[in-house]
Length: 187
Image (cartoon, rainbow, N blue to C red; front, side, top):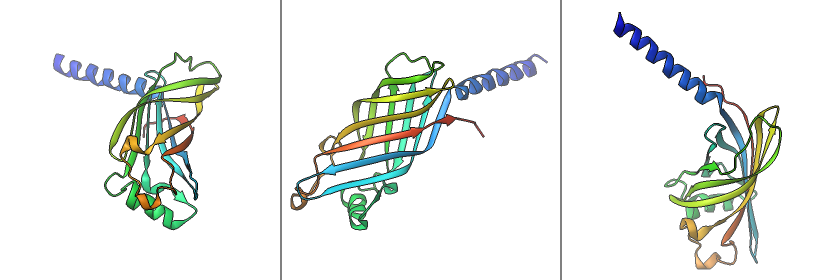
C-alpha cells in the first residue's frame, strides 16, 4: 500500500506544481512585430501579426518567437529578398527572444510600468545579449499588453548586405512590438 500512496502523492505534487506554473502564465499568440529600415534610396518595412510570446509573472521570464516568413512587405520582391538573401529563412526560420523583466513588478497592481528586459535575442542563428526597454500594462490584476521599441544592428547578427544595395538598406533596423496577453489555459 505504501508504494501506491507514494505514487499518488507524487502525482498530486506534480499536478500542483504544474497548476502553479500555469497559474502565473500569460500568452499572446498574435503579437505584432514591425520593422522599418530608412535609407537614402528607399524605405523598407514589414509587419508580422503572428508572433508568440509567453510571460510568467512568478519568474518574470519572457519568451517570444517569430517565424521569419510571416513578415509581410508591400513589395513581394522585397519579401522574397528578405527571406532568401538576408535572413536565409530556410536555414534560420525563426527569431527568438529569451529574457526576464529586471524590475520588481507587483503584477496584482494595475498600471502602466516601464520595464527593462534582459537576456538574449537570437536572429539569423546568432544570439546577442540585449537589454530592451518597454512598457507593461496591467489591468484587473493581470498583464494585458507589452510594447517596446528597439534597434537591431544587422552586423550583430551577421546579416550581410551586398555592396550593390548598401544604399538601399539601413545598417540599423528600428523594431517595435505589441503583444496583447491572455491568461494561459493548458489544454
